[in-house]
Amino acid sequence: MVERVYNFSPGPAVLPLPVIEEAQRHLVALPGVGMSVLEISHRSKPFEAILAETKQSLTDLLGIPAGYKILFLQGGASLQFSMVPMNLLGGKSADYVLTGSWGQKALEEAHRTGEARVAWDGKADNYNRLPAAGELKLTPTAAYVHVTSNETIQGVQFRDMPATGSVPLVADLSSDFLSRPVPVDRFGLIYACAQKNAGIAGVTVVIVRDDLLARAPDNLPSMLDYRVHAKNDSLANTPPVFAVYILSLICRWLKDDVGGLAKMAERNVEKAKLLYDVLDKSGGFYRGHAKPDCRSQMNVTWRLPSEELEATFVKEAKTHKLHELKGHRSVGGIRASIYNAMPVEGVRALRDFMVDFQSRHAGKK
Ligand SMILES: *Cc1c(COP(=O)(O)O)cnc(C)c1O
Image 1 (tube, rainbow, N blue to C red):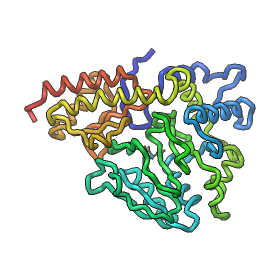
Image 2 (cartoon, rainbow, N blue to C red):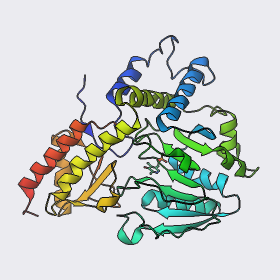
Image 3 (cartoon, protein in one colour):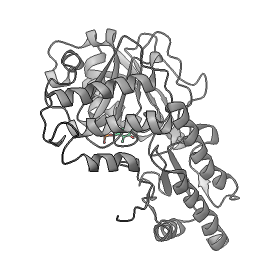
Image 4 (cartoon, rainbow, N blue to C red):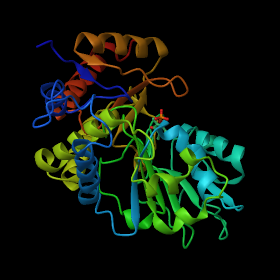
């Protein structure tokens, strides 16, 4: 087999090896079907079984209560930036909590559809923290409150979601979906593209509370209307069959190999701690971007004393099989994305490299 490196890409990102191997084994013909999952009708029994299994797995893993629909949509999380306001605004205004770049994008798109207000904006601190208790300026009559659970670029992540009273909470979970348990009943709507923790690009999961479906205006184009997808069980048109199939394998891996989301979260906390400990013990050589109590367990972001050293770090890391560590251009520095499928061995290898790199380069600037 060709050797695999440790892939710290922010997305599309590393997949669990057993999932890739199973997909490879069954790519030419699904057992008992004799055709590839790439070749079968989305209305065939085998695909219906895959769809049903995926929904059941998500329900089991996340403990999704009755009264919610699970939808498998296309257009990425970015299309949800538009579909959420199109379906849920109902002529009212929505509140947006901005903790980083993705929240900003969501707000921009909401403005194209209707009215949206900023309930909090972390821009003044370059999005290195979350709102403190009491800082949120929420409107009691808002159609919904939108938050980004984990800001993939800046590396800040909510531990607990803000309380929004009777106003439905809507959350972009794209980069921490299935990485930890989620109290689904606290949300009106959750959406997440799959290519960070839940598989490959092409499918976006939407979990929406039934009562919110009634808000959509009647003149919405059908493909942008949650009701149409809910009524047709995500088969209103051809869904991204291969991406749904990979999601089904990811769910199986989470259930059978990992042992559920609480176990997954334990692993993720342990992995993130390995890296944050290096930042904290580096005497300022590595400067973490996020405030310690707002740190992401998924995307660890930090700077080095100079941009030259950052470039050297990324280049040298590659010679140790540690790839895709360059930070996003808007933040700079280094970003290590350590999603579910990044093994702890990969994070240990990065930690050891960081300690060694500092010992060789500290003081040189
Ligand atoms: C990756 C990402 C997106 C964008 O997803 P697309 O599928 O590319 O549209 C949105 N929000 C967050 C938090 C992300 O990490």
